[in-house]
Amino acid sequence: MPYLALYTFGVLKSPLADPGPLTREFHDSGEAIYRKISQHPGYLAHAEAADGDRESYFGLDWGVWGEFAVPAWYGKGRTVETTALAATLSLWTGLRPAFDAIYTGLHREALNRREDWFERTGHPGHVFWWVSDSVTPTWQDGVSRLEHLHDHGPAPHAFTFHRAFAPDGTPTRVKDIGPRSDRAAVR
Image (cartoon, rainbow, N blue to C red; front, side, top):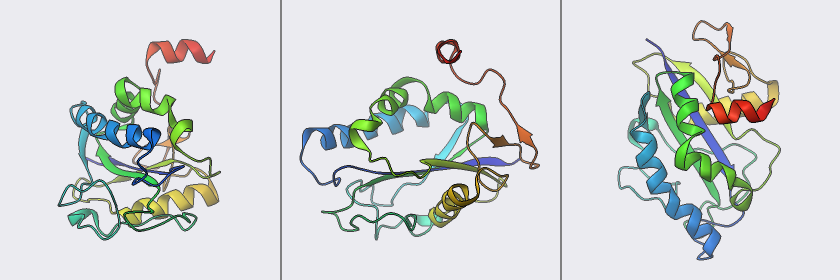
């Protein structure tokens, strides 16, 4: 059974080490969000550094998830003092469980605040692709897929919720995707 890989990437307005209240608020909310999402039906796993450090991404041991990588267009720092990014890499059983986890609860609240924390880059903030159940995606896989999505648009190789593909490569749509309140507001 194939699994759905999800890579997210955003450039923060301030480095993670910035002691300012907005940066601290973003950083501190991460633990509760990860805990809640990891309990969501359909969630399988996410990349975690072996030592659990959340102050930096570079140079950490990510185990089977591979060496940490960023898109070519990321131009901010790579040290503990200058890193200004947020990235995740996770596995899901399908599109619907991923959507429900991302667009409800604490994560939804955080998404509503993204303009407070993230720069607008003109690049996609997430990408999906299917992997076999014996494959663990790597950070480099995520970067490659995100860059492909930016350069070529959605395809079975790299896609989004709005233009999704089934594991066999055919276009798909998740019926009535999202919480009822969201569907009513989109009319």
